[in-house]
Length: 157
Image 1 (cartoon, rainbow, N blue to C red):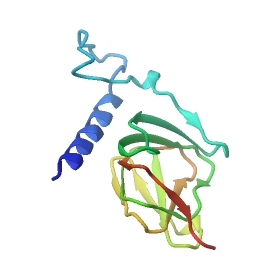
Image 2: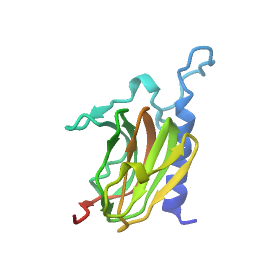
Image 3: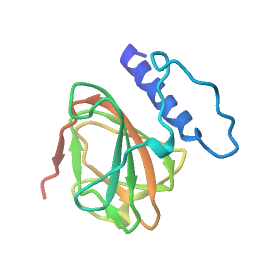
Image 4: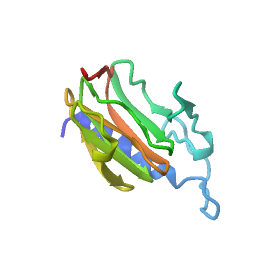
């Protein structure tokens, strides 16, 4: 495992651990030195809705538009909301945190041909390979990490 892969695996682990933070009935530790440990409680995560109103994103670490590692949460809103067939310039790694995320491959957009990926699952979108994804009748929250900058190209129709 390269150092970058090791660091990204650690970031994912931190993101999953933080999900349980701040829950009622969970004991809160004393303060921690922010030079050693950074965290965000769920109530402090800043979600930004996309222009189409189909999803929200929260950048947790880095910037997917700049060189270097990043971690982003995506909240797909219910209502048969999907991206259209596209691909990215590099590999992207996902953990499904809640709900069911639906994934499909190929140039032909067909939400009925997608596969359900339940909470707890792990997914890789390989760079240069056409896919589409989203939510059907329930909200799905996924966490994606990779190395930026990310370029997204819509598939030819």
